[in-house]
Image (cartoon, rainbow, N blue to C red; front, side, top):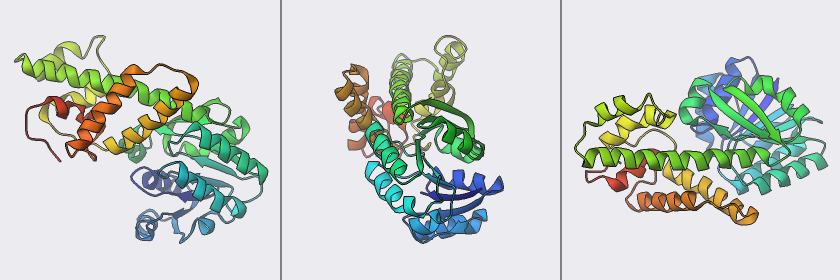
Length: 289
């Protein structure tokens, strides 16, 4: 399949590389051209200097960029250059509103837009083990799915346009609560004078077990917060969640509180620490940048 790909950062770069290795003809664009050139040289993909060049003649166009405005700009630039009937798959975490807006724009030009945010972080992208939650036309998703499986372990259709983004919001709500609970548990164990490793061994096979516990308990206890998904990005995502909740009437008291805790981490200099750095605001120890 001929694929255009925009956004070759810590997530998009590995995803596009997996597509090349799966045998697809991939042309990659990045706002920082040197990053796209480096990606093309390392992966065997093709370099594009513009979005239009990456999109020209493609049946599938994938993007993984920064925010709503970035998506608007990239999709608007790509659509006229795609083959008729092409599908656009957006892996950016955005508002549900912009997903619906882009779906309508694409339909007006004879193309299809799928909102398809991912979960699994940088490690999931590198290892080809992302989970994709998608909204939009199910037939278009079915056609795109074999390509998406080059970097995913699961692709789930969630409903009409915007449903993928709403599901990603559910994901971030759940993560925020779990990470805060874990940070407090580690903090309590330390203040109580427990061996945190032994405490983990005692509780990690019971009801408290989670992916976050298995992967971040020890590093939280050690004050290490350099594991990918940054606080700045989480605050962007939680901002989308809280905006949606204000619109639909959902009550998210814990999520709003954790968002404020992340703002404290930012003020400590932890904007680029990973999300487990909620523990840092509870620890009396030198902070790791």
